[in-house]
Image (cartoon, rainbow, N blue to C red; front, side, top):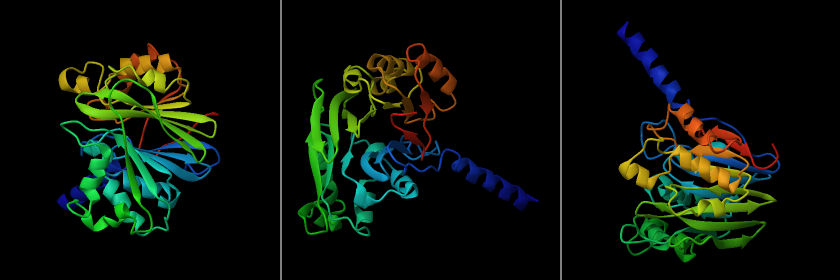
Length: 308
């Protein structure tokens, strides 16, 4: 009898663990946004950490953040490493960047031959800049994964090319353009952590990614103006105070930004235990300011960008 009860409980735990994964395909015609990871740094939310893919006509072209678990979701999505044009990091917290070594190691088993640029924020006393971060992982002399150093030197099939983007000030800054898309960034306030929000314009569609931020810089409305889809991070509830409020924006600020920027669709991600189960409350606060389409993200979920 005890064994039967244990088996039932194990089954319930397994079904719960998979509840937040929505297996979908973004490989149709047009531009799509796929949520690889909709969670935060916790190991109790049953979600991969932050990661997003921008698909165009069946190709996964742009990867935004890659927290723990996001590379498993990448594999489950059917995305190919060969198709990636660029990686964009909002900041270097573990839950946004830790799966980079997993991607680089996996690329050894792919047919990729094109260099892969990776853009992320400049650093400060607490955090390295993106170039230093990549060097700390892969440099031949002292990198944590120095056995993968050939991906920096050019002695492998392709090079990983890191670049720093200023996370200071309040200017919206063009970062790269070509291959049919344009990438723009803006510094955002994430407490003491250098952080960026990103915008991608591709095939007549526009997406923006808030990353983690509290809204103080007031740069996101400019960056996200008129976008077809904004991914905003719903990491804290409306009554957040102290450190968590200094790091993250509550639902009311999300609603204000979405309304000011006139975004056409809002996707709420980076969902944590402190906001899970409080979706109705968060939605009420956002609806006081923003009336457009709104979705709480799940791992693996796909969104058509533009025409609905």
